[in-house]
Length: 210
Image 1 (cartoon, rainbow, N blue to C red):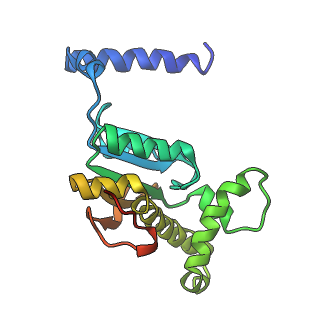
Image 2: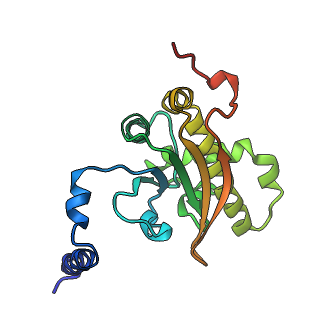
């Protein structure tokens, strides 16, 4: 048996287990999705959204990319955010980073990674904004971990600066924005930052809606 074929077998076992515990699970799931959460996480294979939050399929709308970035010129994530906010009526958006993030560590170096440089530039911008604090940290592991936390904070701010979120705040008093960090060493999540609907943001980023 080839390695990838094990995934198909495991899928069958998983589906059978779900049905044995809840005979209507897939029938109910297939009708529609009504998740309360949008999860914006890192693509790292060690940080699977549903598993670490112990949620079922259908509970969470998920977008993942390298280092959990919210980039306004990335049409992929902007489309995800708009769909989640305007069509799924998401109540909470969670940006989740993690300690030991390879993207964050790479952004701290002067290595050239080709196309990836364009993406890592966004993390370098976070470093620039918080340079005074980060330059005082001499231990590289601690510096990377702190940059991971600050990156989460800045990505939550980026979410609040979108017209989709601001309109939903004004019209529906949602979503709440959350910044979390995941520790791979103990499996625990920690809150870094939280913005209530309607929280003040820098005026230059605000939109007027009729």
